[in-house]
Structures are given as structure tokens and as C-alpha cells.
Length: 123
Image (tube, rainbow, N blue to C red; front, top):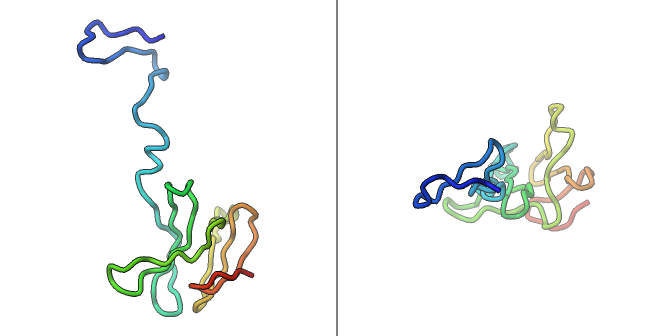
């Protein structure tokens, strides 16, 4: 139990080092924003990147730039897949783009999947 500070009006309490409860949880910090990494250019000249989404459990989604300025980006990766490789720490990447075809590493099984950007079918 944490001893209360002498002045109860402030609502503050004193606690031993490392035992205090923070109003800032790990969930709040991780939900602060999306991150983007691993940029590439698709066959039509638009950017493709990996976007990490805290609101989706930190899932990494391959995203393509909108066709029109201010338009909505295209999620390339279908639900149930996360673009992440455990081998990238050695200098590799989690995906590669050639024209309108992307090959990506799925985090859960570390297998490579081939997909046409804008298509749902994976091979």
C-alpha cells in the first residue's frame, strides 16, 4: 500500500521507486500513431510501404499510395496477413515489388507470398 502525501487536497501520493502506477499505459503509447517503413515504387510510379497499425494489434500492412491526391490509400495485404520478416535484421526486407507484383514475408509463418497489387489471390 502506498502512503498518501501529507496534503490530501492535491490527490498526489508517494510511492517507492518503480512501484507507482502510471496513467500512461503501454496501450496508450502504442496507439499513439502508425509508422511507415520500407518504401518502394510500384509499376505505375506510386509509392508502396509497410504501415504498422496499433489499432489492429500492431499488424504490419503493405499499403499503396492513393491514385489521386487526398484519396484513400490501398491496403494490399489481405486481413490475416502481416508483412514482417524475422530475417530483415540481417539486411533484408519484408517485401519486394516488381511492376504490379509484390512478394512479401508473412510474419506468422515466415513464408513468402506473391500477390498482384489490387488483387486478393495469393500464391
